[in-house]
Image 1 (cartoon, protein in one colour):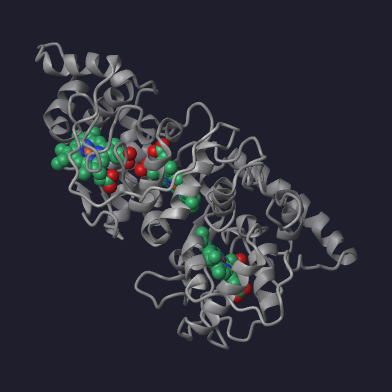
Image 2 (tube, rainbow, N blue to C red; image 1 turned 180 degrees about the vertical axis):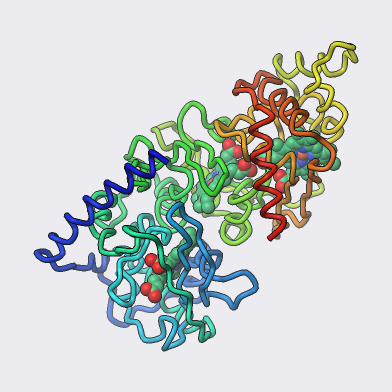
Amino acid sequence: MKKYLSILIALIVLGIIAALALAYAPFKPSGANEVLPADWKAEAGRGEYVMRAGDCFACHTAKGGEPFAGGRGIESPMGTIWASNITPDKETGIGNWTLEQFRTAMVDGVGGHGQQLYPAMPYENYRFMKEGDIRALFDYLQTEVAPVKNEVQATSLSFPFNMRFGIRAWNWLALSGQADFKPMAGDDQQIRGQYLVEGAGHCAACHSPRTPLMAQNGTTVSDANFLTGGMVDGWNAPALRGKDARVQTWPASEIAAYLGAGRNAHAVANGEMALVVEHSMQYMSDADLNAMAVFLKSMDGQSVQAVSAQVATPGPHSMPPLPADEAGQATAKLLTSASPDMSLGARLYLDNCAACHFVSGKGAAEIFPELQGNAMVLGKDASPLISVILKGASSPATDRRPMHLVMQGYADRLTDDEVAQLASFLRKGWGNQASQVSARDVAKVRQKVQSLAAH
Ligand code: HEC
Ligand code: HEC
Ligand code: HEC
């Protein structure tokens, strides 16, 4: 609460500055970052591809609603923000918009009525997109998407967040530099990966921490906190950079498989990331997936070889279990000892989980995720882990990996104390190092899971 209060006060101060600023400084759109010939036309399919890279569909389509007709609610601590209708309907969508208006929404966060957009729309990231992609995307939305008349419910947040002009001042503080992409010192593959990750892919929206003003703390590779881990809608978005980042121990080909197929030898994408794979990343070409993977592995100047292999080659593959290291073997030994004084957590694991995730905690490649070193198991906030134990998990099928993965939940089988003991065991087993989980932590998550299920 204290945190929100300070944000509130900061925003009120910002609001006053903004009101003054608005009186003196008229808004000037960033404009195109590249001059294209007047008769320029995007090659067929490019606009749709950029839409996939930017994941516009997921936010701008309501559950069961028409594509891009808006009305999906994005939850924020200040209230629900309703995504706009971006179909070419002339009254309720963007059918009457010019390219300039569209670009201004994408890179400056100013909407069709001159209103400041809430940063739930990731213009903090889209502002790095190049003119060619923005134009291709605009043409796609105008000509290939069916117009849908759908008046989206107006967003009404509580005071002072309902004063959209305050976002003007927020943008001055939150947006770093010009709306333009600055390539790193690297080869073409790294730079292409950087472009997709920083721009359309808006990975920083989830994987970067937030500043006290709730702006993304790190939007480009030159920012120290870029992709060092964040929190989104109750899920830990793990660090992708730095010494604690598990992905830095994966070869680039495994990162590309995770993004393009939602699974690899170590992990399965869950929750918010499963949605990113489902609606966006699975549509990326092998070349682009490899580029993003190589970029992620080279962010701090590490030398990484170019990768051109097919991503997640089709099977059948023989996939022997991953070998357990020393810490893994120690826990495996404890679990197989059948000792009468085995802790309750270890016993619950043996009885309920080991059949799939194995006593080594290594699981089975592409089906049962590894629990040793697992970012969700080790998360600073244990609620995503507790929630998966209670509710289970599922991960979508993709063209590259058509099998839908499901894990059943244990809410009806394990008490709060049992889940706490089990989760604490996972967080200490196989060399994992994370804090204990209490029955109270579990009770809180259980209540939330139940109230969501009741809706
Ligand atoms: C994470 C969710 C999210 C994603 C991803 C997203 N948007 Fe949005 N977008 C929103 C929300 C929410 C709003 C409304 C913001 C507001 O009312 O202030 C919005 C507003 C807009 C607007 C302004 C509409 C108007 O009437 O003023 C445009 C244009 C737009 N988005 C286009 C896109 C495109 C194109 C993409 C894909 C490249 C995209 N958005 C991806 C959430 C998202
Ligand atoms: C809407 C939020 C969101 C966006 C956008 C997003 N991610 Fe994620 N990502 C997550 C979450 C949450 C997880 C953890 C998933 C889990 O626990 O299974 C995750 C996990 C990952 C992992 C696995 C990390 C690990 O240690 O297991 C990788 C790699 C990854 N994301 C890369 C990316 C890249 C690259 C992008 C941009 C193209 C991206 N993500 C965009 C939320 C997001
Ligand atoms: C019948 C097989 C099976 C059993 C038994 C099982 N799991 Fe899973 N588990 C899976 C599958 C399949 C997934 C991948 C699904 C997904 O993540 O969407 C998974 C995913 C997970 C994840 C998410 C990992 C991540 O990185 O996102 C955790 C944590 C987990 N299991 C823990 C447990 C625990 C603890 C138990 C025992 C209470 C257990 N599992 C029992 C099959 C199983």
